[in-house]
Image 1: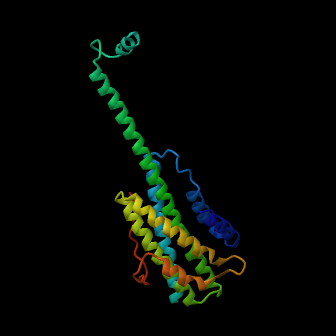
Image 2 (image 1 turned 45 degrees about the horizontal axis):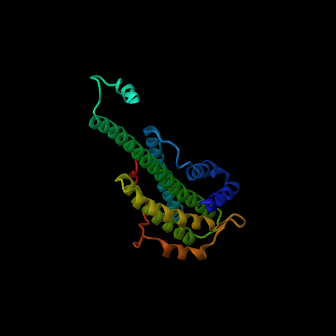
Length: 69
Length: 165
């Protein structure tokens, strides 16, 4: 994952508009795995997962539309 | 014995038999064990959710970068289609992992998440920040490494939700 973080840091320089998204990836990849999790925090992670999947599908559709245009 | 009596004062009804004491100690230990197990399991689940979310976000990043490259005519539509087919196939794998996680099969989910994280990282390394282009010669290699064998559907994806509450 260290490799991914290095590349992501480079991408932020190239595409500043991607900073929030990339920052969220880095936060998820570097989170402390031993930190205590409350049920509320687990629910928040589930919601974040659903939102991330939807954003991914949206980006697929946008790219698909551009390809077909 | 003095110490034992001190301990027994906490219980109504005088002295406590060894059997009762063992039962209480065992119950306390069992509750502690269950709490420890639940905590570990929740932490593992949380970590899987974080990695899965990072996986989807990595794919979103790749799609967005590809969109930019195509908009700026740095890659062709055929190249972009190759990338899209790959990211879509990876997303389908993450969907499988999300379902595994939802049904409590954390181990199976983690195997897929690990594979896709590696593949999407490799795909990301093909975006050259200097030239702003994707090294398309390596795409075929990645396609071969994907655990999915079916050709992904190239029509627009549905808006179903997975991995939620």
